[in-house]
Image 1 (cartoon, one colour):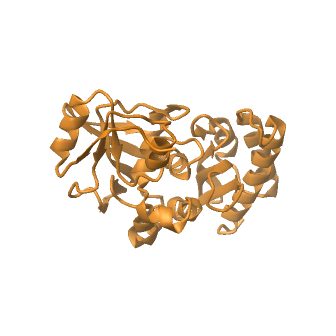
Image 2 (spheres, rainbow, N blue to C red):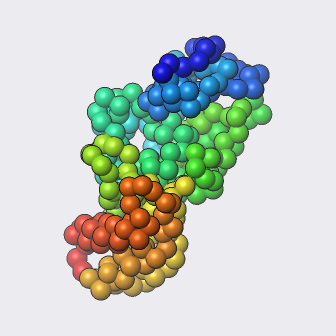
Image 3 (cartoon, rainbow, N blue to C red):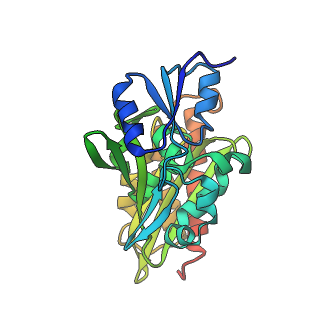
Length: 287
């Protein structure tokens, strides 16, 4: 199939982009286009106007500001993978990015585009929720900031209004000693995950001081596993705790029905993924 007819606008300033979003009832933004172009060709999306933001200045930067890393709207996945600052500040992102599609797609696809699109099987929204990122939205009325943990509302549903543009994502720098947790199940490496876990564990003085874990892929939106985290805090990481937390993950998730696997099978997969991810994280820790 091919897309239906639409108007195309290549903007060269942020004001021009925001004016176009405000003035057109059915407009959509093109950055990397790796999800959008396929959706257009399948006529899953049929906008009146496509706004190309690839020539906006200043949105392709990765900036460190104190305890945060700011990722601009036009930063490509590949650019983020190659960033030494990002690798140091956000080890979870470094662990997850190689699972995002394939090199050709990472060369064009943008991290903020993935965050804005909100595919439940995508890795970057899960990482943003796990790390407590903040998403910066701009409109003609100004800018507002939305915590990633309040941004995702359901299947491809976010709190971004139609007239708003996601211009950046701000990630807190991981504390010293924090260890990433990432594992997913996919039909092939680079395909969207059928289910996965993304998170971070911080151990101080031999006990778990912070633990954030997100389930994705089988849920309508990234699911922060708060009950599981509560079982971990203040306890020493050992094989017994890992087994307990893996079981807690399997009990807390609420997988959607799928022709690929039964709900019970997915719970078993989550338990195995949790054990794998937690054991990998603990390899960095003297327990």
